[in-house]
Image (cartoon, rainbow, N blue to C red; front, side, top):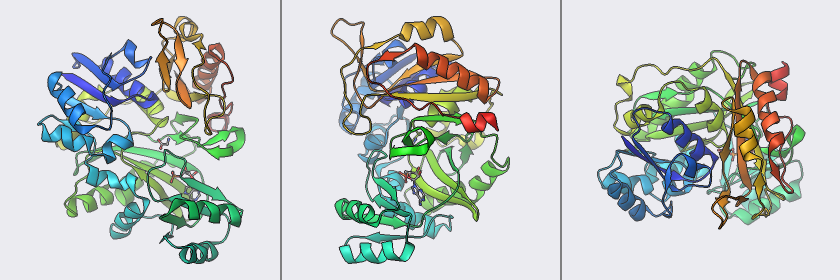
Length: 418
Ligand code: AMP
Ligand code: GLY
C-alpha cells in the first residue's frame, strides 16, 4: 500500500517511522514533512491545509491511504477533499473535527452524550465573562473557543490576567478548575467501533515542576504505572463510545483519532478537551509501544472495518519522549540555528533511542539540519521500565547540540520513581 502522510511535526515523524516499519507499506510520502521525515519518506512541498492540492497529490501518487496529522488541515476539510476524490483517508471530516476546533461545540456534544466534563460557560460579552469568572472563583480557567496551537488556554489565580485573556479571545469558554493528574487517551475509530490505545501523560508547561507557560507539550511517557488499570475501560464506556455515538447520531460521524484529554479528579474522570488527531508528543510514546503494524489499523478505520480488526498487540516496554525546543519557545522562538549531534544519537543510542524531528529543515548544503520552529525535535526512548527509558532518552538529549535550546529535565521522573 502507498501511504501519504500530511503534516510535518514530530507526530508525523513518529507516524512515518511506524509506517516505514510496516511491511504492507510499499511507498511512503509526506507533505510537507521535515528534515527528519525526509529520511523515511519522500517529501512533497504541498500546503497541508489546501484540500484540493492534497487530494491531487494523493491521486498522482496513487496513494491507497492518506493520514492527516495536524488539526489545521482537518478543520479546513482536507480529509473531506481526499475522500471526495475516492481515496481512503484517516482523519475526521471538517464537521467532525469541530470537536477540537470549537471548545463550545465539544461542550455541547459532551452535554448531549452525558460525558463527564467541567462545568462551563460560553461567553462573548464582558458582562458574561465577569459573571462566569465570579461564579467559579480562582483558579480561573479561560479558553479561547477556537484553535490556538495549545496556547489558547490560561489557568491563573489572578483575576485581572484571566479577564484580560477572556476579553482578548472574543468567544471564550470559562470553566471550572479540574484538579488532578492529566491523562491523554487516544482512540482509533471508524465512526462506530472505538479502539482505545494505551494511555500516556503529557507535560504541558514549559518549565520543570510544571512552571511557566502552557506549550504544545514538552514531553510524554507511557505506561502510567500510577493509573487505575480499569481507566481505559471506564473512559471507553463513559467518554469515547458515547461521544462517537453522539457524533454519528448527529449525522456527522467522527472517524479517525479521537484524543481525550482527561483530568483524574477526586470526583472521578473529567474530560478537559477533545482533539481530533494524534497528540504531540504523546504519539511518540504510544506508537513506540505498538507492535501491530500501523497502516492496517489506520486503513481499517478509514474504511469502516475496525470491528473486524484483530486485537492490537503491545510491547511490554515503557517509552519516554523529551522535547527539545528553541530559545524563547513558546514565545517567539529563535530559528535557523544548526542542530548538531544527531548522528551521535544514531551511533550510540539506536535502536532504543531515536530522534523525531519537528521544526527542522535542511540548509542549502543539503546536509546541515537547522531549527525551523518552536519545538525542534523530540527524543524518544524505550526501556524495560520508565526509569530505563528515561535514562536512555536523556542520554540521547545530552548528545544533541542546539544553541539556546531548552528542555525539561523532569519528564516521567515522578512516575519512574514511584
Ligand atoms: P487544553 O488546550 O484544553 O488541553 O488546555 C491546556 C491545558 O490547560 C490542559 O492540559 C490543562 O493542563 C490545563 N487546563 C485546561 N482546562 C483545565 C481545567 N478545567 N482545570 C484545570 N486545568 C485545565
Ligand atoms: N500534547 C497535546 C496536544 O497534542 O494537543
